[in-house]
Amino acid sequence: MSISDNVRIRKANKSDLDAVVNIYDEIHQAEEEGTISVGWIRGIYPVKETAEEALKRDDLFVIEKDGIVFGSGIINKIQVDVYKKAKWEHEAEEDKVCVLHTLTISSRAGKKGLGKQFVSFYEDYALENGCSELRIDTNERNRVARKMYSKLGYKEVSIISTVFNGIPDVNLVLLEKYIG
Image (cartoon, rainbow, N blue to C red):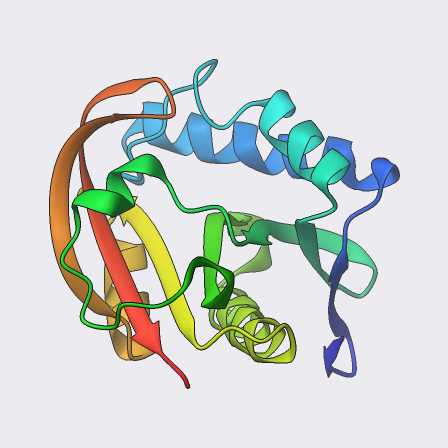
């Protein structure tokens, strides 16, 4: 899908793996330096296997600008186990729920709105695939993501304490947006 003349979102291929993992590492580095707070831990989540497994499932997408990968995300119908504990405003059949996981945008992209463009793509993709309920989760500490999702019409429905992708003591914010 072409978003603008020089920005494109597409399914990832094997040759994109290094770029995706480099962005994971960049985010881990910034977290370790204290310049951002997303709540991820190097060596635990996300890791190369996160991207490899998504590539095998064919649900890893990348956003590129001028042919350079600046971000990635995983889009599928796999709901995290703690979603069952949430009080969703819109109960939907599982095959009508689309989930965005592990959205990453490189700081090298600058503040160009690539995250917003990716979320817009996710919404269009969900509609094209028969989904009317959108769900996303993020760490309570990730204020940047929470602010962006709020501006894009996502509602925080629950904050659940859990071990998330191997990371202990996460307050996981569950968000939803009904587009049906």
